[in-house]
Amino acid sequence: MSAAAAPVIEVHGLNKSFGDKHVVIDLALQVQPGEIFGFLGPNGSGKTTSIRMLCGLLTPDSGSGTCLGYDILKQSGEIKRNVGYMTQRFSFWDDLSIRENLDFVARVYQMPRRQEAVERALEHLGLAGRAEQLAGQLSGGWKQRLALSACMLHQPRLLLLDEPTAGVDPTARRDFWEELHRLAALGISVLVSTHYMDEAERCHKLAFIAYGRLLVQGTAAEVVESQHLSTWSIHGERLAELSEQLHGQPGVDQTVVFGGALHVTGRDAAALQESVQRAARAAGLAAQPIDTGIEDVFIHLMNESGAAQRLRAE
Image (cartoon, rainbow, N blue to C red; front, side, top):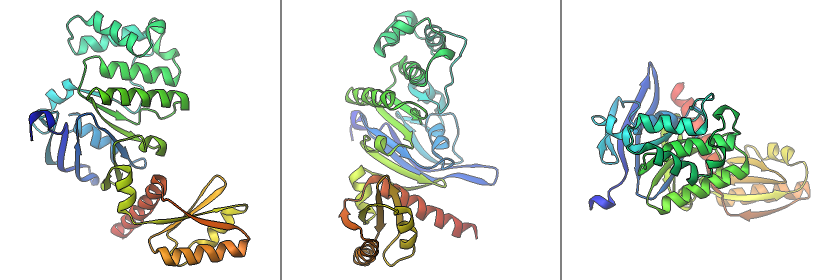
């Protein structure tokens, strides 16, 4: 493999514990240049710890790998200087203006011609008109733009974004993802953790993690296909009651209400069909098979991993 085609992230067997809590267990990931890689999992699943190991802020207890070609165990300083890391919480200074915050970050990176870099960053994400506004007065969407501008100041080839759109309105989320795809088209790689399924579907690749364990990774289509699930949809009223009735029926692994529809999912397609059609007829409702979605798979995997974790704890 040529240097130009080498993965920007390639790690194997990463482990991290805090006291007696094993937070990340044998993590293996590979992220390619220009790829948006989505990292999904519930709170406490190990996403943030994994990202901090990748960007050099935490040293793994064991495992190996590289980030931007630098050894994650021996060259964490080089990694920190060459990635853009956006934390889960807004981490800039409320009593400094947007311009002052960006100038401070440029000083930290000891950037030459830093004023030019700051002005370029202000223009690039539409912050010039608010450059003198205090960061503490910004809405969530504008704080997000400031954080992304700061990440990009030193022109990194890799962005590590930890739930960057949490608490941001839908319009700001859409604009943010359009910017991520523009950056990816320029060859910049992005690893982004998220709870939003619509964002997961906008990633080139996905990885699901729960209780510190990587469950599955691949494209959205590959992730869905790997689980071999069948899904039926039932529309109508009193769906919560019907959901309860279907629990534990042959072939039924999970039931989830999505607005005016009940999704019923399982691996035994024939048994699932029989149970769903019988329950729907009894309720006077129509049922139809549908394509299994990424959210159906996510819920299924989280339920399975929760059950497995409970067994390990017994």
